[in-house]
Structures are given as C-alpha cells and as structure tokens.
Amino acid sequence: MLAQRIALLSGSGTAAAREAAKAAAAKGRRIIDLAAGEVITAPPVSVREGAITAINAGVNRYTESIGLPSLRKAVAKKLSTETGFAWDTDNIVITAGAKQGLLDATLALLNPGDEVIIVRPCWPTFPSQVLLAGAKPVFVDAKPPSYVPEVRGIRNAVTPKTTTIIINSPNNPTGAVYDRTTLQAIGDLAINYDLWILSDECYSGFVFNGDRHHSIIVAHPGIRSRTILVNAFSKELAITGWRLGYFAAPPEIVAAAKKLHSITTSNANVIAQHAILHHLEVGDGSYEREMHQRLAAARKAGLKILSKLEDVAPPRAEGSFFFYLDLTPLFAGLPRTSSTRTVDDVARILLEEAGVASVAGTTFGDETGLRLSFGAPPEELEPALEKVVATLNGLKSR
Ligand code: PLP
Image 1 (spheres, rainbow, N blue to C red):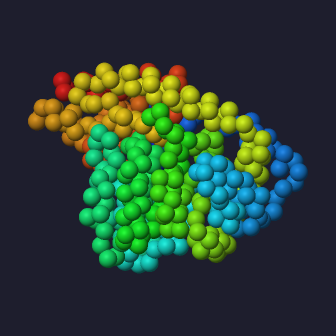
Image 2 (image 1 turned 90 degrees about the vertical axis):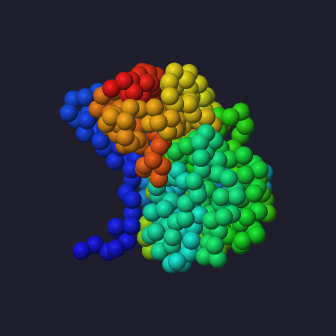
Image 3 (image 1 turned 135 degrees about the horizontal axis):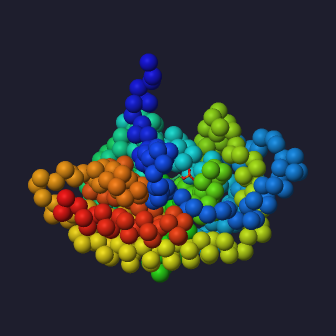
C-alpha cells in the first residue's frame, strides 16, 4: 500500500500526451509532436565542449550540494547583468532543473495547512508540489485572450492562511507575459499580506511581444527579500535532459536547500555543471539569439496558419513557445449531436486523425484550452499546424 501523498500527485499530463504520441508512432503512424515542452535542436557547442573537457579531465566527484561555487558565481553574474541588481554567490543554488528549485522552495517555505495561490491554467507540477508539502493550492483563473490574471482575483483569494503566491511569466501553457503593472501589483500584495513570491521564470529567454523579459524583482525591487526566482538552462540551451537549473533567493532559503539537497539528490550532475560554467564563460550570446530568432520566425509562420481557424481566435503567444488556443467558441458552435465534447476529445482526434500530438488544457486545470508547441522542428511545424486548422475547422460538419 503506497503512502497517501502519492495519490495527491497529478503526474505529468504533458508526458502522458507524449507517451500517447509514441504509442501511435510505434504502431507505424507518422506523428508530429507538438506536445513537447522543449525546443527540438542541438545544444550549443560551448556546452558540449565544456562537458567533454570535464569528462576528459576526469571530473567525477561530488560538488557542494548547492553546486560548484564557480558556477554559482557565474550565475550570480548572469543574473546581475539581466536584472541590473547585484547578486551574490550566497544567493544562488544550482539545481537539477527548475523542478528541483521549485520543490526546494515549496519544501522550505510551506507548512501543512498553508494556502498557496496559483494562477490557472498552470503547469501541473505547481499544485502537486504544494500538495506534497502538505499545503493547499488555491487557484485563481486567468482568462483568455490575455491569460494575465486580474490582481483583484488574487487579492480576493488571500486568506489568513495564505503564505505564498506562485507565478509563471512567460507562462506555460498560455504564453502570457505579465505586464509590469500586474507584476508590481502582485508585489504590493505580497508586501501588504506578508507573503512569499515563488516566480518561475524558466521561459525568460522567450518573449516575443517586442519587449524583453521583466523579472518580478525588476518590476518591484521591494519584494526581493520575499521572492524566490526559479530558472533553468533546460529550455534556453535545449538541454532538458541534462537537468541543470538554478534559483536565486534570500540566504535562509539557500541554507534550507543545502540541507534538502544533502539528504536527497546531493549536487546536480557535475559534468552538466562544468558544461554550463564553460558556456557562461565563453558563450557570446549568439546561440540564445539564434534560438530566439528561430522561435520568433516559427511563431510568426504559425500565427499566420492559425489565423485560418474559423471558430477560434489566434492566440497571443507573447512568451514561452506555446500556442494556446481557447476552444470555447468552437464548442459553442458544434451541433448538439457532436461527439466532440471536451478538449481531451479534440486532442485525441488530432492525434488519431491528423497525426498531431498536442496537450489538452485539462492537464493545466483548464477545460477549454489546447497547447501546441512551436519548438518543433520548423519543417514539421507548419504542416502540423495546417492539419490542426483543417481538423478543427472540420469539426462542426461531422
Ligand atoms: N517550470 C515550468 C513552467 C515548466 O514548463 C517546466 C518544464 O516544462 C519546468 C518548470 C521544469 O523545468 P526543468 O526541466 O528545468 O526542470
């Protein structure tokens, strides 16, 4: 008999979508994967060289549980450049991907019974980790077309038990990028109600609205002592499998992470740490710029195709690399007799009939959304989106 906490976990809906796609491909079907939460491309040469050099130098030992001091220093420097504030090595923890940083934060901050406000649609790991810590997720719905939450809604959700707000901008799955005013108002709330902010910024390299990424700390410097900024190299350097992320936080959270890592995973993979250190030392930003250009072009081409949707508004897709479609008007226009009733039905039809893997919004706590990644290889993305458009436009005549 398993412990009760396991039943609390949602599992990864995105992984389930990809497994369904793999199962269909194993039966000989050609499936284009728009379900993956990663950009399909090779990592930078500097990262690969850094790893190979470390291996050939015989690097093999444990590091400090929160990471190599040299890497923590390099990350502090990167963050100082990006935010315009000085960060110290003592503020930085190296993690096995953003996921571990988020778990460190929830385990360090939350007591059983605490309430945590999460903006929904949300990446499913947030509520699961909150539950794992014995706390209670309290959802605030962000509405289409912007999917930026109304701060009034967040304020109304605060109770005496609330300790933390989790935000994620640029957002997975909605592609929303929170404006500065919203970020400032969330910061004000945190101060007024004495709350922590857990800000997942792992899509910070992917903003397509003509602006650059604004960390909540930049929008509201007054919240620095109550904020944990989680980020990762996973998406930006296309190394999701290498498991390398980091967070920046006040020293008490760093000390908690040190304890947590030392009794759980120990350090993040030492070769990956050296690889990223090398990249931070010698990289000139060209890989990141090219990645951004590739995705901006994919987004533009994708939005052109999606503008042919008859009953669904094209998404804003201001950040991350997801098109998130609100299918509410599509469902409203379907005949009563239609067997297509849910977004899960739509995702299944796309997989079975169009050969396109997508992720239904139910994975993110949303009954009407559909997520399509534009991190797929460019030559696959456009034909896949054409099929999505043809299939969705055809639903009302079935
Ligand atoms: N946070 C968000 C919002 C994500 O979408 C993901 C991965 O999809 C992660 C965190 C996890 O990132 P990592 O692979 O670095 O653990």
